[in-house]
Length: 285
Ligand SMILES: Nc1ncnc2c1ncn2[C@@H]1O[C@H](COP(=O)(O)OP(=O)(O)O)[C@@H](O)[C@H]1O
Ligand SMILES: [Mg+2]
Image (cartoon, rainbow, N blue to C red; front, top):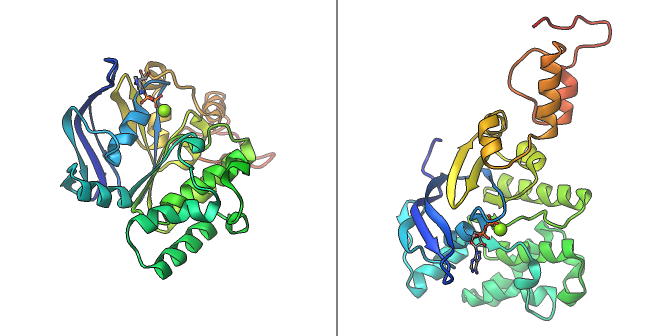
């Protein structure tokens, strides 16, 4: 990885009050400006780690660094951290509490003490970014799940964070809404926001992430470029992860000698482009 990481965890240990150890000395550096996926079985500690990224949880030992600076837990440091590192929960119902969409999205910027005109401008910008301007006067509890997730993201974006952390942003969404959600996150990365998300969907992580962390038992099991992660059979087995369909198909085609070995394609289009034209020669192994 090049450049200073935007977030860094150093030997984080965290146990819940009932004694469950959720983070077990995990250390990692999140690359700046990229879209980074966290994978791992249920209970691996992904959500607990995300709650450390914006100081909602405090490590029992170890440290979190934001943009090279050690996170402090006094009120004003936490306020700055939470403006810069916005966390969107898996279940929007735990996050949304205002009467309507505009009020919900205005809450964070108002709390930052911004002037009314700036709040309005940022709320409009955030709603436009996630395409919910038409919903602004709706009560949040009438919205569909996908719409609620967008409102929760807009509520974070309105504070102009440098990092957007989304816990399972595509959970419970159908395939079309999941793809739209990932497009939305892509646009944020293009606008310079570092995006971090967790998912159980290996196909999604493989095709959409720039970098992947794999967690297991509160520790890091592996990290790297998606192609390297998903060709590592030992790592996939250890972390109970399936192989993405594209990688599986690509490996079968290489095995049969229909495609030359190399880095697996990231998209279906890329795979199709590598297949020689009809009547063309198949490669030999
Ligand atoms: N509030 C809580 N109280 C007690 N244990 C918890 C709590 N939240 C999570 N855990 C436990 O901590 C571990 C890590 O959970 P979590 O961070 O939610 O993992 P993941 O997001 O990867 O599924 C699991 O064993 C889980 O049961
Ligand atoms: Mg979780």
